[in-house]
Image (cartoon, rainbow, N blue to C red):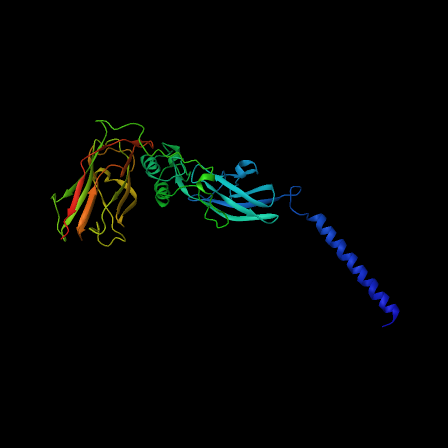
Length: 354
């Protein structure tokens, strides 16, 4: 290789290095690194169960210190000026469970994707339970809604769709992660979501309140293996009761539940006369527990007393089950208030062991 050609190649190499350096410098100017001086952004899309428009969701970052936005009709939100690192996202919408959790911003643009908010929290305490069910049930059929909280999907009426939304998410609690794997739920001690759940009635029961009583049929001191027994829970003075939630334990080694209606996918309790026109989002008898949630649909007249539920068992082994209404029952009126009740006599199903 001649000296001239060698010099030409060296000059070309130097020019190439300079050109690359200029390009890199220009790219640095155009896309500076993320940091306190040049933060990035987070974006996502919120969907609301039961609705076709997703506007109005209030989205905050880091308890509001990191910025906020309100979703548009398609559910989109953008929060700008965020540094790299971990952040806390929070989403709030009336009648929906809050979404809250941590996510990692590791790029200039953090795309969280879809976040789904679960519907049915009519009461607004981030728990979907009998209070929400009774509230929606009592307003059922009203157009416009007799109680705006009961119109879960915001279509101007309280109909079967609102009941279905409560039913679908019954027993769910907020905050949720938005069904998004990039969101990590915070420990309860760090969560800012407030649950104001009126678990107990505001006063003690008196003579004017309902009395809840368990009975067994047939009624006997003891039962033998192979016998069939029906346990029933009744209420009197129940004209103001619009919803009931029952959790009654039974000895599953002693008792085998029988189908209320043969062919059903799971064993269920029979809803009694008190809620003959009721709506039940949860009804199962399994794994040692009778679990029923039921509410009166609409504001029509009902009997002042009657049966809440009946469960039929076959005695399969020895042991004992005590059916006691204390601490296993929650009653509510149509305004989402817990009703106090008196505890009637317990019923004991006893099978002597050989």
